[in-house]
Image 1 (tube, helix red, strand yellow):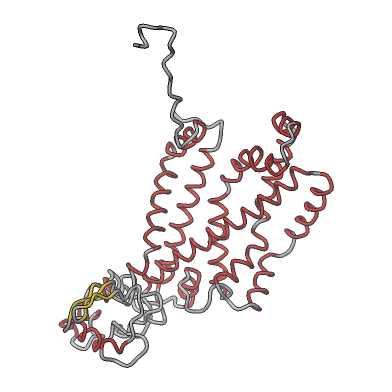
Image 2 (cartoon, helix red, strand yellow):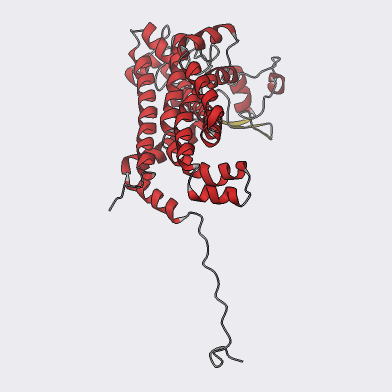
Length: 382
């Protein structure tokens, strides 16, 4: 029977399809996009960070892919012993003329755009290191370090140093790419770990209050009054340098910045009607904190994340500049700034590190401003 002929029969109506974002989050995203400077800064930062994640395919002293006697090899991913190409060393130096001639005679190689890793030393520099970018030298000068000079087949664009070399003849651009990746990964790891600890401590203080809040607050006041930089320098001088060692040291103090914001939000919201109703219904404290109070507290917390991230990167750069950061030889913007201070006759070192840090921190600050506008309920854009 037709449903239109019999009005007693109701046609089932499909419920509206739930979107990926709630109306509140859609409004926040529109507010974020309305801040053009922060919106495009986000995409530019993601582009730079995404490229740095594939640094081995952009700057490396190994070919990306090679063919040798009919066999396809992936030197960028696999360590092949030199005996595979007729040598005797445990690690193959693909930049060696002997190895490169052997592979080219029996196959081919595809190199990254920059044929240097962060630790590669250019043995064909025209004069003592540091050397300027190749575009500041004449063709005869930049190829003078090769056996055949200008006519040498190795004097190609990939073998030239686009931003010059440091005082150890290492390619500056390669070290910037790898250093950018380490700085961002370190900042992200420190920010996420600090947020987890700080938000948890602030939630416990604000929700339970009383003696719990009093004791934890006195501990945080004492802990935050310590001279952080001096303690970091002392601990870093005792423990062996490393990524995770430095991350653990800085995590001891970086989580405190989140506690105050989350604690205030939980103190304000713990006596709201919906929280009292949840308690009356027998909902346990953990569920109330996680499902009802934490989302409201995270609104204020998320606005601080880009600024905390930029502060973490700055702290790592400062420790590297003082010599208490990453292990010696690691790609570091702080170490490059220190080289720029030591080698004033090579201004490209200091300028490169300065512009890299300035661009990175400026993008993060612009993103932070856009996030703050997005989560501000009073902010509306036409």
